[in-house]
Image 1: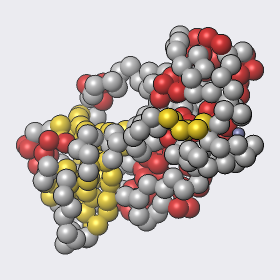
Image 2: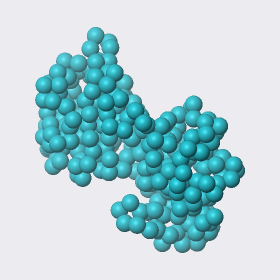
Image 3: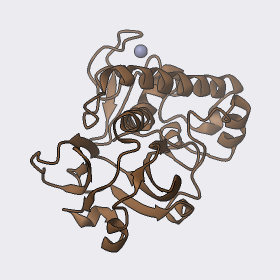
Image 4: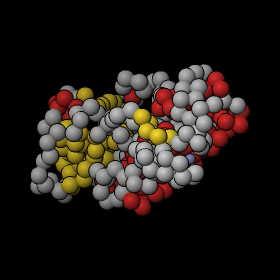
Length: 271
Ligand SMILES: [Zn+2]
């Protein structure tokens, strides 16, 4: 699942490669993924690409006319959605939800699980997207200070792993980076927020910021120009069950299937 670091770097690469390009044609081979009418998609032709950004687990692609943002494509790739930059003649993969021709390049959205959603909304229409108005601050938002984090976490009870993944609390963290952050903070994924000391909360906050910033920096070196490739090879614990903990050497525990949680029972004690 693309998370904050992945989508940040994809947005940066799209800015380098397609910002300012003119939309020549838009088609939807798998229209089920796209929340927009054919007329609205046709209406993008002739507009130009503004500055791509990320918010939570959405990639935002603005379309400009006369220098002002007119429409925004908000893409939530969920489990397996990927953007590709190809030439227009390249073979179209199965489960391609969107093709957008931009001069000699084509932006495509491919989703092998068909779980993602692409919303095309007016520049002021992001609040119409399900979940958008309730979204908390981005986990890397400069305004999310330690004090602000302390105040927010008081309102969100429950276990730490689902808490970190809850976009109403903080936005942009999924299954992989929640494991990484909790290992870095030495907190068990099943610990309840109510058991945390002030020092624990501070360690969690610092770990969240450090893990996301370090991953974004690594991905900037790894991802471009292949924006469709998700890099997870540098993660410390996620999906490394059975391997030694990089900190203490004890075997990492992994539970659950597709949405697995990996942790160290020594470094991340249950209380
Ligand atoms: Zn350990």
